[in-house]
Image 1 (tube, rainbow, N blue to C red):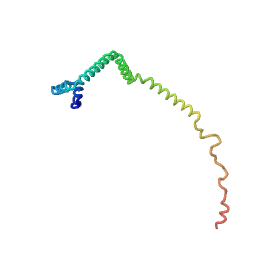
Image 2: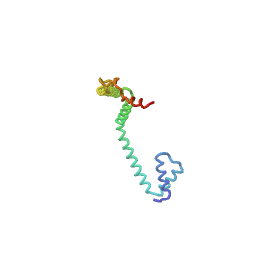
Image 3: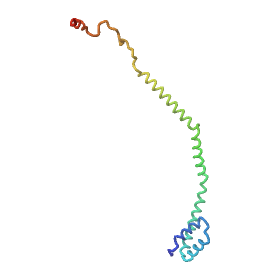
Image 4: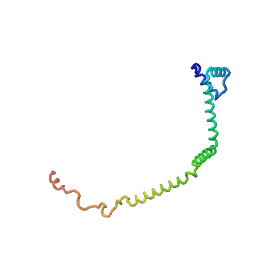
Length: 144
């Protein structure tokens, strides 16, 4: 195969599958195929491969309804999760658990509560005896 123009030929051959070629591009492709007989073999192999792929694509379309069902089921689950009916049982359960926890904490704190400040025998009482020793007698005698 001649290397000159091979890149352009390969590019145009790929483009031929996607769009219709211009008259100038068609003339180039025909001249290149005429000079290189190996191109006919490659083109026929490529066509056979594309036909095989097209045949497989048709066979897989039989599974489309199951795919549709899976997609629709997934969409329904997502739409249900966005409603309040889906989350209400979980939120109610969390609220009941929080109330039970608070009640338990109240019961435990009442059992271990602080001791009362006024226990019998601990009140302050006035004493009749002096708190400090009487040192006044010795100090008065020193004064003139």
